[in-house]
Length: 506
Image 1 (cartoon, rainbow, N blue to C red):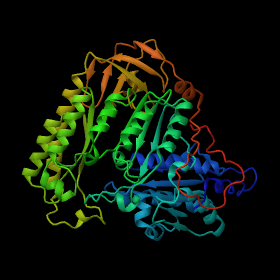
Image 2: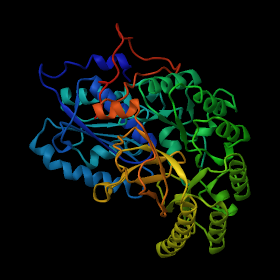
Image 3: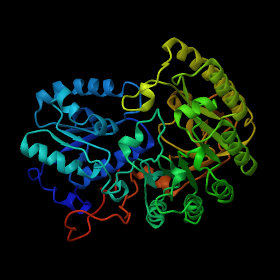
Image 4: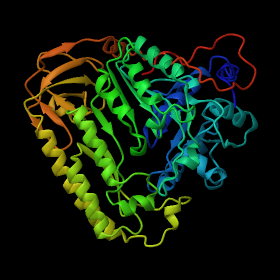
């Protein structure tokens, strides 16, 4: 795998004056979104430019997910749509990375022989080298590593936002949930050193970023690799000392590792947002055992009680799987009971479907689709009722909103602007005479709570223009300079430091 310095050697690989363009199509979780930022940074460090029109890109990269239902069919369908363009322009290159690439490997080039590059979750940094090698050799390059060699956050990044940034604190997962394929694709948990994480957070804040989200497959297990069970709480408190950083979020924690010191750190660190996303998966203890989830429903509810005692205004969201093999009506009723008691602000609900390679796929008593669908609809209806009631409780309250892009699909028609409150709720508001930009902060009074958002039509009370808003308006993005992990480097070091990314990301 190339080092960051090795990326520089690829510059000039194409004829002088020719700049190849790229586009990245991202599927799946926040980890994949952040990985795509790294892929973009690597490509731009190697001399590529982001395609203004994705349909005419010289290089198309698919960053895939293996968790979603029918992920493989969707990938091959998308690859099929690109085949005529590839036939018409043999110099065009197609690369497939991410979790599905890690799982399917050579299957991809067998089913779609027009693909040029296949790379896995452990060798994102190889992308520019593999593209050049495939172009030079006129043959597909497949490189899948079994373990991490270079932590992704040591790579350049092309950040998508001027005001919010992802910061990965760990990769991989040590859990063995029977429905989940992630551990086999992302590997065992690897933790970054706290100093390296804080250096990245400080660099983002210095560039004007207001909000950081700490990422990990099991984010609150952070520190297990180096034997510090309080490392995550300490990290949250340290983020509270970063000048200019106004909002800190994290996702996703595991109930097993949710401890009182983390709750105290959340409550006592002003810039840690009153928001918690914690997957329940099922309210049935019998199903939780079958899932190999190492907590029970009573423990889950105890955590929520402790969170709300310390942070009364916390908005809690969750993930729930309906129709796990062997789930009975009694099991499902237990899930509904926990949902009623938990009063989630939002729940991401999924119908179970077998994932090849997971233990649950081979379990007996797979449920009929009609049964799963009917239970799913009941759960969604209950959660909609709860979400609506919880949002209506906020009517008349004043909230601070970080103005965002792409949050309000109907903003043009409604003449509203959208953003997120500190608790993560989506707010659509009428700006009145104010002209807030993405990255600015406003305060508004909530007039109406809908099941999935809040509405304010009374105008803006306060509008704070920020450096992030300035950067967004100017088309600038954080520099994304790589930070070390303390892992060994590979390859010959670069003679001079290499600039990470282009520094401007539209």
